[in-house]
Amino acid sequence: MFIDQAKIFVKAGNGGDGVCSFRREKFVPFGGPDGGDGGHGGHVIITASKRATTLLDFRYQRRYEAPSGRPGQGSQCHGRTGSNIVITVPVGTVIRDEATGQVMEDLTRDEQSFIIAHGGRGGRGNLRFKSSTNRAPRQFEHGSLGEALCLNLELKLLADVGLVGLPNAGKSTLISSISAARPEIAEYPFTTLRPHLGVVALDDLHSLVMADIPGLIEGAHKGKGLGIQFLRHIQRAAFLLYLIDISEWGSPDPVASITTLQQELAAFDSLLEQRSFAVVGTKLDIKGNGENLARLQAYCQQQGFPFFPISAVSREGIGSLIVYIGKQKGTQETLCETSS
Image (cartoon, rainbow, N blue to C red; front, side):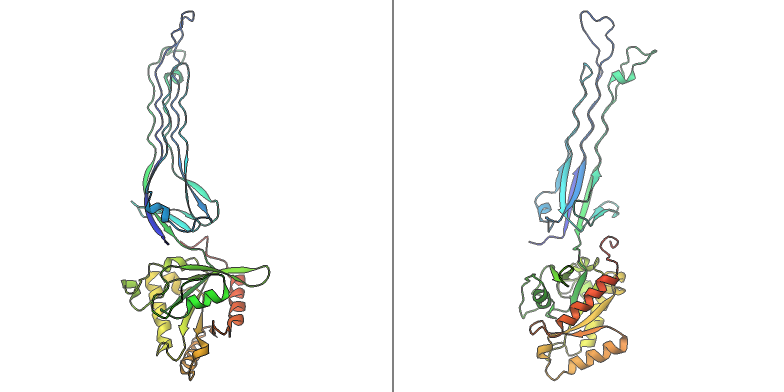
């Protein structure tokens, strides 16, 4: 099950109390204060791991609490510090404070970690207050409370290229033909119900990651179809491919399909509308009389859009497309660490 959103509660440990204590030994006159400090509370740490792929674990465990520090004791014994707890999330997870909506951290690297909730400080025992003018202090401190937060976790897949298209535009067929990804492929709409990542080899030394997301329809930003809930997974992509069905059974107006996709992207995030892209005409092997192909090609030429007619089945045009997107990766800085 692919889960890309979750809500959790985290609570760092409280600091232990300091203690007020005096030495009571038979042959030690004026023993004086010997109250130890309380231990510090444990932190809650979040770390990213490429071994994690979804936020499914957080559907079953939503509460994470670190141990509190132990109180101090007499004979100058300090309390034990509470141990830290580590929460592992997939690379690409955005951490937000539910109360304010503020992004607290964006984990885009493997093994990147940070303290999300700091443990409370342990209180000082009365030994700490001893001075030349205060030989028998009775004051001590209570430990401070650990931080507590409600967090929203949002997973955004890390990809170099994002595939965008209407249902049955051929996105899953394309990614399965040029990578090892194996999404379900069928003739009915919305076959793809969750995003898929595929690694595309450019040459012996270089590769790129491509993301296939469920299809969009007009009104998706209002919740029609599968809505736009999966568009977050291409927000980090440096380059987009608009896949348009140019087969004889495809959309009667391929130009309108481009407009629909651009409008839905803009409704979700205006920055996506400005992202570099190319138009890919799919299902070239069943183009029929070629009317849709000619219309889409003329429109792209008029608008100055890069256009690539392909067939993922016969692999016609695939080589030119891979070379082109490889060049785009080489000339553009990835947005993985800067996009939110």
